[in-house]
Length: 194
Image (cartoon, rainbow, N blue to C red; front, side):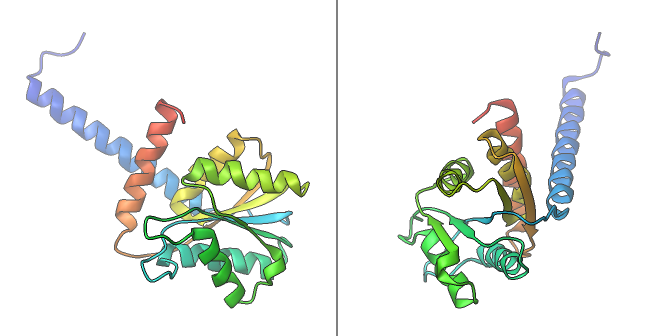
C-alpha cells in the first residue's frame, strides 16, 4: 500500500525517478559507446548522419568517417560500407561519405555504398544485404559513441553475429540533444519494439 502522500509529492518523486532513469540510461549509452571492441573483420560499416546544406559532412558524420578511414588504414578491414540515404536537402549521405573517404586516401574500389536507408534499422538491413552478397561474415560498426548501442542492437536483431564496434567522438553544441534523443530511442525500442 502506498503511503498517504499528497498528489504533488507523488508527482515530484515520480519526476525525480524518471530523471534518474534518463540520466542512468544516458550514462550507460555513453560508457558503452566509448568502449571500442575492434578486431580484424571483413568490413567496416560507417553509418550515416546529417549532411549540411552545402553538401559537406556534418561534424558528426566527419568524425564517423575519420574513424572508419583510420580503421581501414590500420588494416582492420579491406572493405568499407557507407550507409545512408537521401536527406531533405537532396544529398545522399552515402555518396557524400564515399567522396569524403576517397578525398582522405581510401581507395574507391574498397568502398561500397548503400544509399537507400532512412534510419538505423534500414542501415542494418541494407548493409547486411551487401555483406551477404559478398559472403562477408564480420563487421566493425562505426558511428558516434552515443549511437553504438542501438546500432549493434539492430544489426544483431537482423542476424549479424560477428560484430565489433568503434565509437567516433564528436563534440559540438548538439551533443546533449543527440544523447537525449538516443536515450529516448533506446527506451522506445525496448518498450515498443521496431
